[in-house]
Amino acid sequence: MIYAVWLPLLMPFLAVPVARRGAEQLPPRAAAWALTALALVLALSSTAALGTLALAGALRLPFVARAAHLSPRLLGGGSPATVPAATLAALALTGLGALVLDRTRCHLRELRTAHRQFHSGASAGDLCVRRDDRPEAYALPGRPGRIVVTTGMLRALSAGEREVLFAHERAHLTGRHHVFLAATELAVALHPALRGLRAPLSYALERWADESAAQATGDRALTARAVGRAALAARAAGSSARPRLSLTATAGPVPRRVTALLNTPAPAARLLPGSLACLLLACVAVSATAALDAATDLHAGIEVAQGEQGHAAFGDGD
Image (cartoon, rainbow, N blue to C red; front, side, top):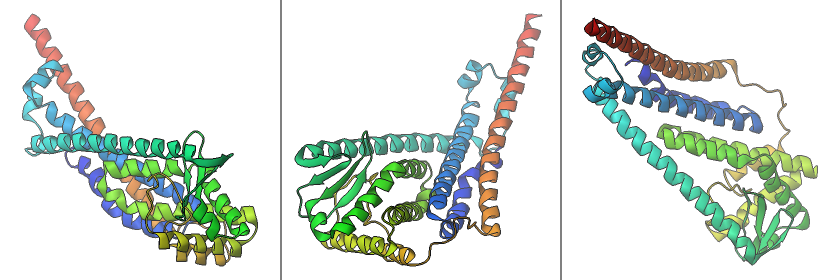
């Protein structure tokens, strides 16, 4: 168990570079789903591995063994590294848990603050216009979700380009793209090596919304021009204070997105090359299987130790 349990902790270092390369060869929607699922599986597997390590060490503490009715023979087994590794795992789990809670509170606070700003803007349906000279537009998740746009951004675009912008941000809301971001942020908090998936996921989500806007307007050239002009206007105005779980048409590598819009769209059935797909599936399978195997091995050891303790107690009674 002590050896298998390390695999889920190390696997993200191999899987992330492969996933970044593979995501570039997938359609945007498929890439977003694949990256998010990969991040969650690897993060949950590594967290389970840490939990297994911590529990394996805790069971070797005398008072824990007595409380769990374990045989003292279990205390003498295992690798010499078990207790130090368990201590580090317990500290890591405590820190990661605190980090997840802190980030969750920050995201919720940002969303509540942003929604309170609607009182200072004009709203119509899912559209909220704020009086602000800074060019800005983003999709704000919530109940209900909103498309937030400033008067400065409206002045920077033509009527047709505004429709593209609204269609882009509406695609973020209807596609619930903030859930993909939130899930990946959770995964990054649980395993920092997964932060390398943030950029490709953000790009995939923006490309997904770009394609949705192009389909809604029926004009890929207009969509590309609207994305480019909105990004130039926002970049000239500097960084904004929008919530981190919001999405905007001005994010990511805009030149790449514009080029993709102006090119012929890739076939929907395009698949990831077999070698990369097999490697990614192997990473996921090994990570999840190793975590499950370590947990199963520990559970079996606990059952044996409890059985031995029960037999010992029965013998004492005789």
